Every structure is written in structure tokens, then in C-alpha cells.
Length: 131
Image (cartoon, rainbow, N blue to C red; front, side, top):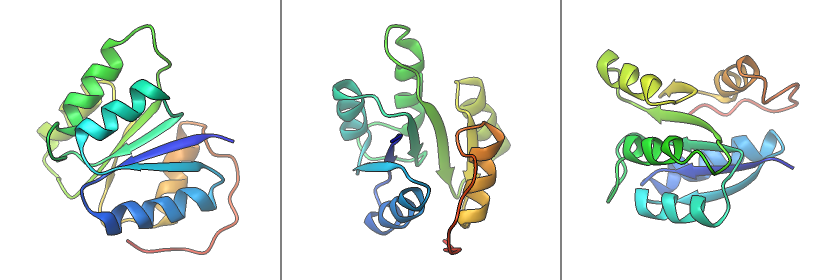
């Protein structure tokens, strides 16, 4: 089973994303801030990370740069999920090694399409959850 780590300071957002990813067959863990995200990655790097850009303690972009700079560890698929629609921020994320950027609001179908594009999701049976 593939693993997914969801990092967001909103408990509700973590719960909703966890439900979607569990529907896709992922084993999900959660982090409420950037430090927690980094600590969990050091212990056991997940296959996929979905992170908010603005995390308490350490920003999501800083976490991305640290993960991508560590050439010895497994490199997970990394998605940002945010309300931020600033093209400069999106470019910074993509140039830093993010695999994609999910804009809020979104639903299961949007996440499924993003995961299918990078070939980490084949087929899904699910009920749509709008976020």
C-alpha cells in the first residue's frame, strides 16, 4: 500500500484530504506544521506528500527544498494544496521540485486527475467529496 503524508494547519482540511486519499487506497498520516512534517519524513519518507504552502513553524516550500536537496533519501511525489493563486508562488514551487499544485476548492475528481497525470493512480471507485 502506498503512503501519503498530509500537512496542513487546518484539522478539517487534513481530515477531508485523508478521507479522499484513503478512498484511493493510500495509508495516510498527518502533520499539523512544517516541523512535524520534516520529522515524520526523517523517520519514514512517504510515497506522496500533500502540503499547504503556509505551514506554522516551517513553510511548506522550505520543507520541499530540504527534501529535494537530500539526494540520499527516497524522493516522494510532492503536491502543494493551497488557496494561493499567485503565479510567482506556483512557479517557485514547481522550480523547487513540486510535482504539481492543487488549487482550493477541489474535489476527489480533481485530485484523481492530478495523480493520474503523474501516474501514481490508475483507477478509482469513489463518491465525490467537494472541498
